[in-house]
Amino acid sequence: MARQALSRALVSAAWLAEALRAGRAGPSLRVLDASWYPPKERNARQEFKERHIPGAAFFDIEECRDKSSPYDFMLPSESHFADYVGQLGVSNDTHVVVYDGDEVGTFYAPRAWWMFRAFGHKEVSVLNGGFKNWVKEGHPVTAELSQPAPAVFKARLNRALVKTFEEMVQNVSSLNFQVVDSRPEGRFRGTELDQGLESGHIPGAVNIPFHSFLSETGHEKSIEEIQEIFREKKVDLSKPLTATCRKGVTACQIALAAFLCGKQDVAVYDGSWSEWFHRAPPHYKVSESKRNKA
Image (tube, rainbow, N blue to C red):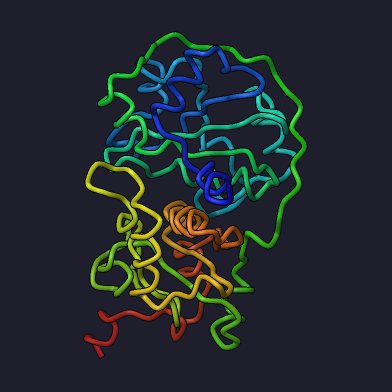
């Protein structure tokens, strides 16, 4: 039973297709497309209008964020989140399934999954394999836009799942929690630019690129494989853990992977490297390129 409860964090395309065929979509089950792409590469909203899972609504991460922050995709306020998802027909009793259309299988959907959990919603799942595999398996798609009836959602931020800059700075010396960075190795080591920023990492962080948890098909690896990945990197899932990345997105893949292993309390450093780079003192930015220049 425990494994079934934990695996609710993931649902298969076959499960969702059957649920939609059975007419379960509605107030009790909402499907959200949480895709986002660099504007010059793809247009997520336009692609949604052209083709999406029947009954799905578009979860716009550009809208559901703190627009007053100088950093990308920071969590919105409780009221902002509640109003936004309420307009998508999501109540506190709704089972939410999130997906995205990224070619890797799953990229932004775990961010939406984590946001719902951070605001106190437990009934939220990621579509395993994403839209790419939904289409590959021959499940239906549509261009028809649904208009769900607005619902009332009450949000309460679980601060244990969110780390601030100040908490991350304090942890450099206190080592109260482990830190896992989900960015590619070159950006973690500081040998390649991180979307225009000089790269590197927070002192003491361990690097597990997020794609490590995905199979070649874009599905999540097995629990046993995920546990082995953490073990190889000497990450102890029985101890406190915080995930970080470039802007708080792929860090949520770490939270999801750990959740599948039974660890439900992984926090995400919301500002991640985009904030750390601008605010941390130079000696708190570990970079091989700096060492080589010296």
